Image: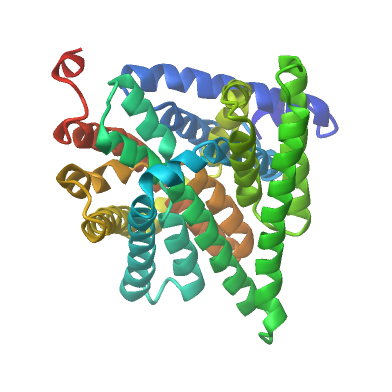
Length: 407
């Protein structure tokens, strides 16, 4: 029973506080190991969660893990807000439709390929709803790993500019696709499908966009340079949590709404400092999110999910590369973008894991656990190989100087 061995069941406050402390210290200790192995921190967090979770050492009890689902909504709100800063008006003026077309192709080709392939190969085990959700999640790319690799080697050039814009727009496409997929699945789950069953979830998501727009306007008015850093942080977190809470009331993901908040704010104020401040504050929240994600990983299911997980892992990579190549050909992008962009889109973590948690709530318990396990286990593999693939793409595209490569 983990820490319950030493505490009575009535000591809820002590159990919660000790659980949080253990989660944070476990994540910190594992990142000391992953840093030596030159792996991203997210890998350490997920592995730490697996080790201390109810399916391994059982340090954190299962009921405690089950009651921490709200952390995913908080973490996703911060992640989405940070993504919003990349949607500046100047970006659209500089890139035109080219980057948007490439992003649509690399996202949708991967999603469609995963959905159809898994349904075709595993029709006896996986239904259409499961494959549709997995395909929607497959469209996501983790921008953080790619950005860290770019900063580490001071990569520059047209290829880097295109890559950063694609990974920024990529998650927006993923969120829209996932929202449509969940709307379709929710409609099918009712006894009789009527127009309201499909239109109502879509209306809620449109309402969430409007809510995010108003939140961004309000934030731009309240968070002025004259305010202290403490008050800027308090007001921003208040708005993000309020929006996430309202979205939770109608069972809508807070991702789109919070992303719009960030988009409106950056375009109204051009203030990048707030995003840096939120990034620093959200570090322990995101660490807890990834560790909790690892605690939900049931190692006992690997035996039955191994083939499906490997298939998802490989098919998504093929879909990303083929989609990026096709999109680049369509817009007549440079040879470097055409040949190597898909290779830099391998990483998948934060948004995908968050969507897997949302998908788990939509599907039946057994299928939901299977979906989460596939995404978590593949995310670990993607975070292991993704940065290396991004580095290879940056090298062969000529984005890393020989001097930086030697260091």
